[in-house]
Image (tube, rainbow, N blue to C red; front, side, top):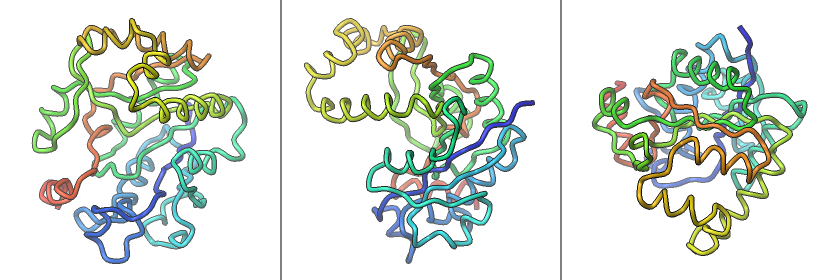
Length: 251
């Protein structure tokens, strides 16, 4: 079975969640069930035979933190997520497929990682994004709220796993900058994605295959959404209230 490398994004500054943990540089180091979120995420990746090397991108001052002991390598973060991603991707060959993972996934485990990686490899994608249909989440973790997007196939949320080939990072960076600049302007968003896609999405009639096709054309790469069945890919700790929920569930 093929194995790929992973990058865990544990950078960024303090926020309301990290304020719950004295001394935590950011929310990745907040403990759930006595174990820092980033350590839980690393452990879930380590369980998977599909993952080889694990590079963690974190604030330089936290490089020796015991929470990162399971990493193969720790690299310094940047002022924005894209800079942190570039730091993590340095040294990878252009065609290398890397799994990029959020650092706040308290229940991540081998079945969830295996399903995602296997699906990406089977489709030979350049960019892949984990998503989860609502019924899987509500069957497993109903107490955790999510934001759901209505697609033709059902209601979906995004997951904390993305797969990238290093050679598409410059194009992705350019697109993300354009998206950031357009995010508050419907006209500029329509200019990026097309009025047809925007209208279908607003009406809940956009099919996942249509979204994949438009993203592939915009990024000049093979882009795919991986419809996962393991709720662990999308269970994240994003709010202060989520910490209490996670501690109650994973104590």
